[in-house]
Image (cartoon, rainbow, N blue to C red; front, side, top):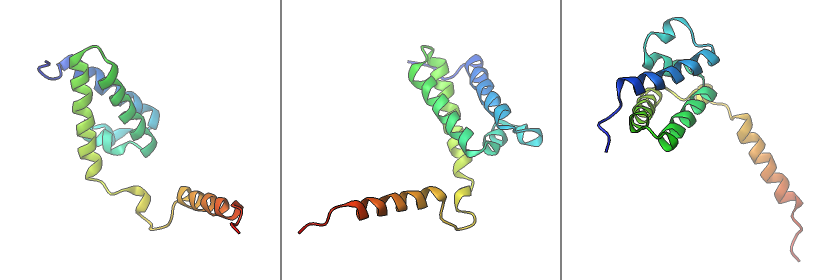
Length: 115
């Protein structure tokens, strides 16, 4: 049983968050704290971070690293839950939803009619 994340494991996981923030182009005041960095991550990078943290929790042999990944996953969930979902800001239907609806309509139209 683990006693929680070690400072070294917290630092290692925070370094991964910083790397993703660098890739996403998050700069300046958005990097003042971990919470601000998490909030500034664009949606695709948030998903990458979640997958990275889940991978660490599942496959790291170091219990401290697993605990640190769990800590940051909970922190990210708190930060993101407090933010409005960007996909619903303007109230329009997303392109993905439209594509799914059109594909379903095509399948229905292509079905042979029963006698």
